[in-house]
Length: 120
Image (cartoon, rainbow, N blue to C red; front, side):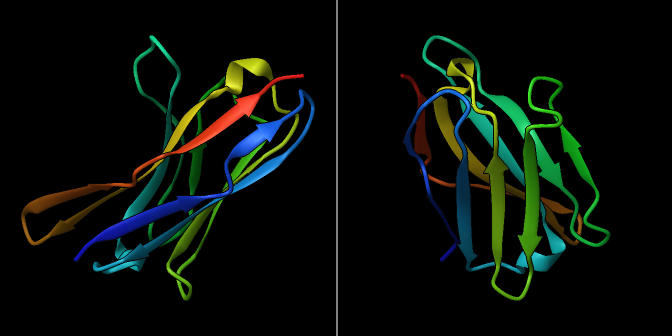
């Protein structure tokens, strides 16, 4: 059974930091691209950060470059999102996502989401 379980969300003041974690199980984590998406009320879900499976190359949305860092620990089957210098506009539900291939079949999995609220 595939599971992606996010944790680490919460309420933080502007300028503060949070670290999100996503623990994976039920699939070969090390071979999957791992992503963090977010969705704010009334807005579409957007890709925040991505990290590849082999080289660990990263990519970020322009809105979070220089403030957020994605990383992964393949031994622990966990992906992280370190969020610094948080702004009110970072308020959203953050979702962990996994994308990979088994043969020619593309697989995609989602976590349940964790709420991040940036407010004074």
